Image 1 (cartoon, rainbow, N blue to C red):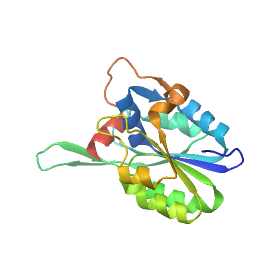
Image 2: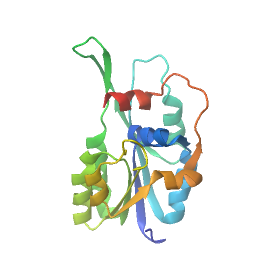
Image 3: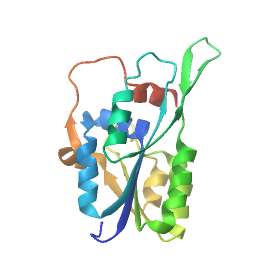
Image 4: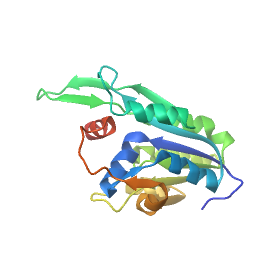
Length: 192
């Protein structure tokens, strides 16, 4: 539930939201997403978190990052770390959980409601801390994928759970029908 006069902030775990939407067969239209939540309350900030492969000649996520940066989102990025595992496979690590948690806790005194776009169970203690500070927390993810993209503990801790599938007609655009190289979010999601 949202109240028109409440101060609202969005915290988007980029790779997690990408994976959830992909599992449901659609892409997120971030302009529509921002517009929808501005309609639901007084949005103070919309944060988007992602790790970037810095040494790639072309990063598939760079155009999205640039677009978000110029269209009302506060971008929080850091270089992804590349390493080779014990089987000699190239791996990428780019976890943004700490950055998201710190920013949410810092903003908590200035907001009434935080919307977390992630199903990562590691955020359950963050949600509990925000609630102890009087902030209502809604979590957006999906239980309609196999397996569900949201941790049961996180879903139970949140004040409300918003099924991403139910937002498809509001914030979604059809998934691409072709299969280009996997987006960086997909690569990072697989490595997490």
